[in-house]
Image 1 (tube, rainbow, N blue to C red):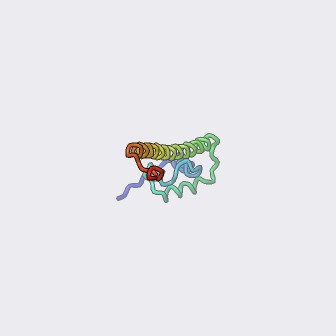
Image 2: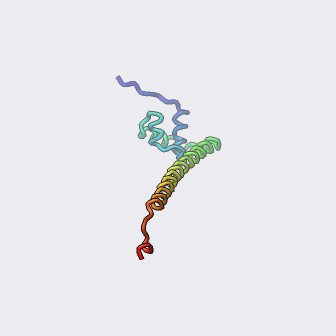
Image 3: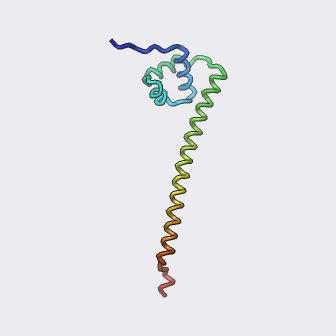
Length: 109
């Protein structure tokens, strides 16, 4: 016989708020909590008409903002890494060109 987990109303409400405010993507919530996304969507629909306190809304909004900022920092870190690698490669190419004494069209005359 399969035993089902029972979650408190407060827990369901908290998860629904995270989804409603977009603080955490549903797939991430599903993975984190071990709950199917279908169940999470049902919870969201059940609690979407509730009035949430200003504090709850603020916390959700801050979580969403933190996630967005983390994504931005990550993208900038990748871009910075690529730029540093490119700079290093260009310096090596210039050094090799200088050492090899490449021939320019003016030297051939």
